[in-house]
Image 1 (tube, rainbow, N blue to C red):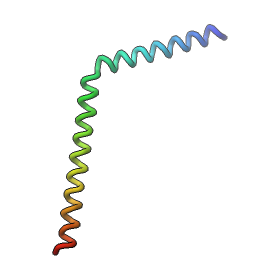
Image 2 (image 1 turned 90 degrees about the vertical axis):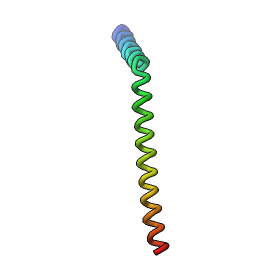
Image 3 (image 1 turned 90 degrees about the horizontal axis):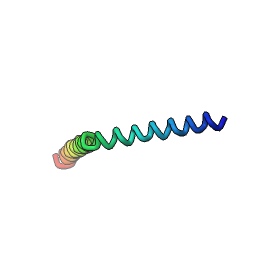
Length: 62
């Protein structure tokens, strides 16, 4: 029973090591995609706010 637990723990540790290694190798593309997503989100929000403001301005000033 203890030996299977050790194998399971070592397997988890190995998978965690592989994941951290993969992230370390792909750090720049991951950061680039996150930055691109943040810029798209900010741009979408700014455009939405701009159209909302124009609509509000037209309703109150015409």
